Length: 115
Image (cartoon, rainbow, N blue to C red):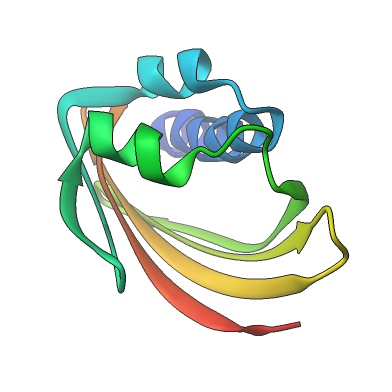
Protein backbone atom coordinates (compact mmCIF):
# COMPACT_ATOMS: atom_id res chain seq x y z
CA UNK A 1 0.00 0.00 0.00
CA UNK A 2 1.42 3.34 -0.97
CA UNK A 3 1.33 6.50 1.09
CA UNK A 4 -0.98 7.99 -1.55
CA UNK A 5 -3.47 5.13 -0.99
CA UNK A 6 -3.22 5.60 2.77
CA UNK A 7 -4.00 9.30 2.38
CA UNK A 8 -7.01 8.56 0.14
CA UNK A 9 -8.32 6.01 2.62
CA UNK A 10 -7.83 8.39 5.54
CA UNK A 11 -9.88 10.95 3.63
CA UNK A 12 -12.58 8.35 2.98
CA UNK A 13 -12.77 7.44 6.68
CA UNK A 14 -12.96 11.10 7.73
CA UNK A 15 -15.58 11.78 5.05
CA UNK A 16 -17.72 8.88 6.34
CA UNK A 17 -17.83 10.39 9.83
CA UNK A 18 -18.54 13.86 8.42
CA UNK A 19 -21.42 12.45 6.36
CA UNK A 20 -22.79 10.79 9.49
CA UNK A 21 -22.75 14.08 11.42
CA UNK A 22 -24.52 15.81 8.53
CA UNK A 23 -27.02 12.98 7.99
CA UNK A 24 -25.84 12.55 4.39
CA UNK A 25 -26.71 8.92 3.62
CA UNK A 26 -26.20 9.64 -0.07
CA UNK A 27 -22.55 10.49 0.46
CA UNK A 28 -21.98 7.50 2.76
CA UNK A 29 -23.75 5.09 0.39
CA UNK A 30 -21.30 5.97 -2.37
CA UNK A 31 -18.42 4.92 -0.10
CA UNK A 32 -19.80 1.43 0.66
CA UNK A 33 -19.63 -1.79 -1.33
CA UNK A 34 -22.96 -3.32 -2.33
CA UNK A 35 -22.38 -6.22 0.10
CA UNK A 36 -21.29 -3.94 2.97
CA UNK A 37 -21.86 -5.27 6.50
CA UNK A 38 -22.02 -3.53 9.85
CA UNK A 39 -21.47 -5.15 13.24
CA UNK A 40 -21.65 -3.92 16.80
CA UNK A 41 -22.64 -5.40 20.16
CA UNK A 42 -26.24 -4.74 19.02
CA UNK A 43 -25.93 -5.70 15.34
CA UNK A 44 -24.56 -8.88 13.82
CA UNK A 45 -23.36 -8.33 10.26
CA UNK A 46 -26.38 -6.33 9.15
CA UNK A 47 -26.53 -5.29 5.49
CA UNK A 48 -26.48 -1.79 3.96
CA UNK A 49 -30.23 -1.26 4.15
CA UNK A 50 -30.45 -2.29 7.80
CA UNK A 51 -27.36 -0.18 8.58
CA UNK A 52 -28.95 2.96 7.20
CA UNK A 53 -32.31 2.18 8.83
CA UNK A 54 -30.85 1.44 12.30
CA UNK A 55 -27.73 3.54 12.51
CA UNK A 56 -28.63 6.77 10.70
CA UNK A 57 -31.45 8.38 12.70
CA UNK A 58 -33.13 11.57 11.56
CA UNK A 59 -32.25 14.12 12.71
CA UNK A 60 -28.61 13.15 13.31
CA UNK A 61 -28.10 12.78 17.08
CA UNK A 62 -24.50 13.95 17.19
CA UNK A 63 -23.04 17.43 17.24
CA UNK A 64 -19.59 16.16 16.37
CA UNK A 65 -17.30 13.15 16.28
CA UNK A 66 -13.72 13.91 17.23
CA UNK A 67 -11.30 11.42 15.70
CA UNK A 68 -8.64 10.81 18.33
CA UNK A 69 -6.78 8.04 16.51
CA UNK A 70 -6.80 6.84 12.91
CA UNK A 71 -4.45 4.06 11.90
CA UNK A 72 -4.20 2.16 8.63
CA UNK A 73 -2.67 -1.25 7.97
CA UNK A 74 -3.28 -2.97 4.66
CA UNK A 75 -6.99 -2.97 3.92
CA UNK A 76 -8.04 -2.04 7.45
CA UNK A 77 -8.43 1.18 9.38
CA UNK A 78 -8.86 1.55 13.13
CA UNK A 79 -10.55 4.64 14.49
CA UNK A 80 -11.02 5.79 18.06
CA UNK A 81 -13.41 8.70 18.34
CA UNK A 82 -15.27 10.76 20.88
CA UNK A 83 -18.89 11.35 19.91
CA UNK A 84 -20.61 14.39 21.35
CA UNK A 85 -24.40 14.17 21.31
CA UNK A 86 -26.66 17.15 20.73
CA UNK A 87 -28.12 16.62 24.23
CA UNK A 88 -24.67 17.17 25.75
CA UNK A 89 -23.72 13.54 26.44
CA UNK A 90 -20.53 12.03 25.04
CA UNK A 91 -18.84 8.65 24.66
CA UNK A 92 -15.85 7.01 23.02
CA UNK A 93 -15.88 4.04 20.64
CA UNK A 94 -13.39 2.16 18.54
CA UNK A 95 -14.26 0.99 15.04
CA UNK A 96 -12.46 -1.18 12.53
CA UNK A 97 -13.20 -0.47 8.89
CA UNK A 98 -12.26 -2.90 6.11
CA UNK A 99 -11.66 -1.66 2.59
CA UNK A 100 -12.17 -3.54 -0.64
CA UNK A 101 -10.49 -1.44 -3.26
CA UNK A 102 -11.43 2.16 -2.53
CA UNK A 103 -14.78 1.35 -0.88
CA UNK A 104 -15.67 0.23 2.61
CA UNK A 105 -16.81 -3.40 2.81
CA UNK A 106 -17.34 -3.69 6.57
CA UNK A 107 -17.43 -1.71 9.79
CA UNK A 108 -17.24 -3.25 13.26
CA UNK A 109 -17.97 -1.07 16.30
CA UNK A 110 -16.65 -1.73 19.79
CA UNK A 111 -18.50 0.35 22.36
CA UNK A 112 -16.44 2.44 24.72
CA UNK A 113 -17.13 4.46 27.78
CA UNK A 114 -18.93 7.68 28.53
CA UNK A 115 -16.82 10.77 28.35
